[in-house]
Image 1 (cartoon, rainbow, N blue to C red):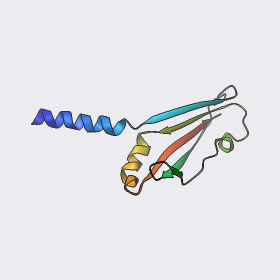
Image 2 (image 1 turned 60 degrees about the horizontal axis):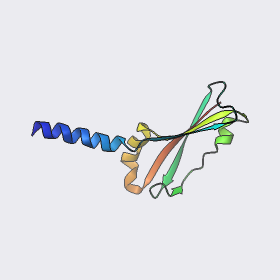
Image 3 (image 1 turned 90 degrees about the vertical axis):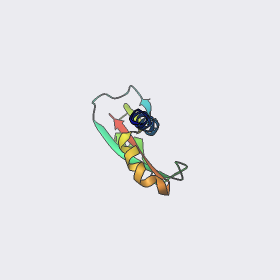
Length: 97
């Protein structure tokens, strides 16, 4: 029984953490200075409708070369544990100049 509980716990953790994703985009030559700005983007109905809009070009502040990283990381998943019952999900957008 003890071994079953360990295996079940590991299986649940693997299933919960498998939802992480990251998308990377490079604009121009990519990041030059390493300065980062982050903003959360929120969606309802399991990601079908955006509640907020994150403008990555505005986060770049007029820079011509920057990287954009859109991800649902572990902190977003922890937030989703609380908000998913009303179908609200976050993701984090990071712009590195």
